[in-house]
Image (spheres, rainbow, N blue to C red):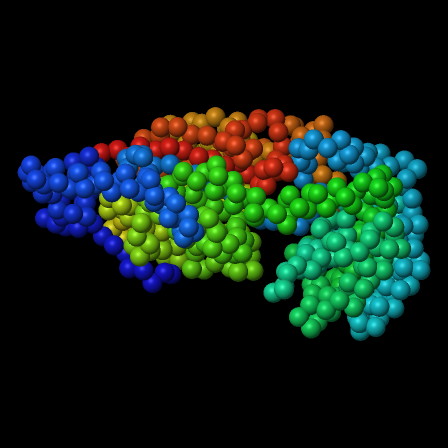
Length: 570
């Protein structure tokens, strides 16, 4: 928890209380006289004219940020945005792209997997017996047990399977995680000196040519068995697959899960390289480089630019799923000049899913009066699926000394932690004398339009927060329009869990499509009136209903949700 001390309101006989908002001001009122009014006013006018003529020039010369007060102190402009962790696989989701070559590539991949026909060749034609022999020798040299058993599986099973219908689309292999587990561990390995990527189609590997099976295999074998991370070979990062978690795995397979998943991962990567070079040999690698620049290597810079230029007038910005590096860059860059960039004390530097709150320096000038509540709220939460960095809750005071609580939260995939976290936050405020603070809560609630078992539906969540005295960007009624979506994405056929892939033609109907009202701005109804709200999936304060995102211009799979609130006198 932060070491900042919580600040309380002054006692009733303390400082002057303004009539507009009923909260204490910083200075005592004075009775105006003629000189008191005229002389300072004349002097202020002179200073203002001097600043307008010369102040901007001097500030530019110094490279300093000019922080100007917001126009209306009784209105609060807020935005919440799950900026989304950087996706290692640029092909994982369907994106809206104007390039004909991209659309043809993805259509051809879908056709290859859906109706392979004569292209559904045996695995041994793609991952050859010669490649297996080299892999067998490398695994034996690593000292792994069970390599002879894996050899039997290769010779009696895997080498004879068809690459699409009997390998890529084999649901049992998926349930055993034989291809997805090694991909999860080795796809993109983050180190102190940068990211190290496995030679595969489904990441941003740029360390060699993948234009043929032989070129890919040379790179792949060197990566696993020669490349070292922190002094250890990459293969030592592989994790055993436990039958207790994945019961489709047999006891015998569990015992040899390290060499078995290595073989399955190699076959999977070989099939993807073969497929891409079959459908688009000249275009797929340049297209991947373009996608990687937009969705991976330049994602943080693009995100920051949208926040600076489009939402730079917001008083408070709630962010979720930010990388630790993003927060550090924001503090050092233009955002840090305009905002206090507040991060959780429990921020996980290795996990790219941290929540932040950006407070306008003009509206909330005193950073010393910001204190954190996150750990105390989570301490009373129990077993809800919340990880370090998912929640940030803080107390802050504006320039008029009005007290607020701001919270930013990233819910679990099924949204099951959202309601408990909301209740825990409200309970903490009530129990610790903070119930009179004005609460604004921006979150990726991970709520769903259609109710189903094991998932938090959006409509019941709205009804629950209304019962608790809150309202949202949907209003203060328990019923909401669940078709005001803030996500619209679906997985393609270029990722290791094909059971979650969606055909482009099914993007409006398939249950695996994520088109849901997931993002909320919550606020205490007694303190705020909703003036306006907006969704944005373009980076220009505009929402296009039928457009899947992210796009090359909009880097997240969540829309920005913004609202203007007016403070209510009480």
